[in-house]
Image (cartoon, rainbow, N blue to C red):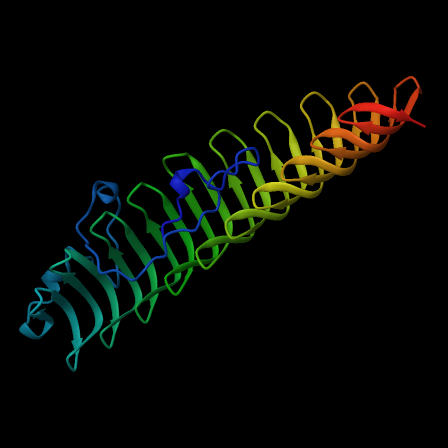
Length: 296
């Protein structure tokens, strides 16, 4: 389930790199409630007035304290032999545990599940799965607060990348950024728009820390399709892109009022085009890598 991409976030349009790489799929693990350094300063998780540290004071009868042959232990509500109500289950071999609500021996309701490697989930459960609203604390310091379905991030959620300082807030589907969402990079860049499989894909507005903006279509974390780019020197381009490069038909407007309208290839005027100078002079014809080679 870990979706940290090496804590790099989805990657900016200039460096797609490992952006949106598949997260390690989470499998239900049995885990440890012993507090790691990350959680020492957090308030204890409370379920119906109980906490994992005080529950032993309330359940003292033999029927509420169960030791299993595999060294697991349970203390809490029991109904006709089932763990049912509120209880703390400690997994002896793995040194893991779950504290919260149970229904007929299954984690169901509100509960806290902590892994021995320091990861922790606090929130809603349905038949043993993280399902509903919950908070997940990663061992590397990352933090996710949002909606879950069958142990996966799904719905609206807020993911904070602690080591990089980046953040994503928006829609998730099967553990990936999918739908509408915003991503903030620690360098000040910001993207707001559509995502698919954890990559910028569809329509979106990317604002660079230096003030440049791209407003248009994306695919696989790169500018693809029609888009408008405003440069920090005052220039302006509107037209087609292919993998972050101006390619196809477009219009380029210079800060000094010069402008070009026509075909592009690899960011250069290439093909048929018309260059109009601020003073009214026109160069029109066939261009090759930025040079007019066949005037008309």
